[in-house]
Amino acid sequence: PDTDRLACRAMSARVVDASMAAHVKVYGARGVQCSGRVTHPVPASSGDHLIGYAAGKVFLEVGTRNGDISACVARFARRTISAEFEPHYCEKLRERGAGLLDVRCGDFQHLRFSDLPEVPDIFFWWPSTATLNNEAFLLHTRRQLWEMGLGAGRRVVIAFDLKYQEDVAHLPVMLARYPAHERHAVRFAEYSRHGSAFRAWGTFELVHFFMDPEQ
Image (cartoon, rainbow, N blue to C red):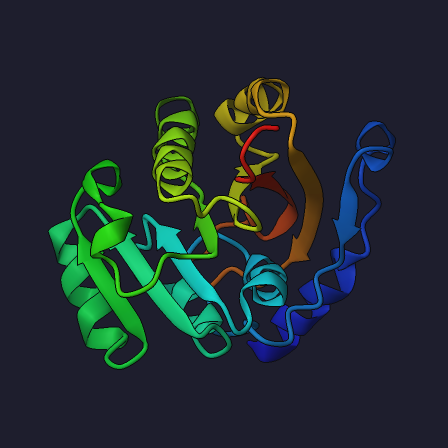
């Protein structure tokens, strides 16, 4: 029920661990734009966070699945592109996002940005396998942007679920290897319509990796 979801949202003023607070910008769960629209495990407040950076710009999400986050951000972005590997999700995205989502079906690492109508300003993903995908996707993105001379001002936003051990273990690796970044803690408390409490509350860390060329 909506009342249950709102009650859960009231819990979102949880205090982020003190060891994180000195390094991370805390973003409260003010999910007023995406609230009630997201069924994917990525919390709605992540969509709200992304809107603040993607509004009026070109946004690309890798691994969009049902398109919950992209469909929400698309109402504010100038253009929204979905890079999805699974064909059955591609069909769902095309049905859902007619006129809103530019669906590119296939392996993101084979996607050529020069083939897109506009080069994205903001890239976002939360992959199923952090250790296999995060760095590979970031390097693919950075290489193309640098080759096109378009890295300045663009960013990759990667989500890390602080309840998921692989994400927790891979986070410091990415931070150490790519020091040009900014960290944001997205706290959430959301009603789970899937009947699971595992992601009903908690913290996602959204790390912005800047694609500006090295000096």
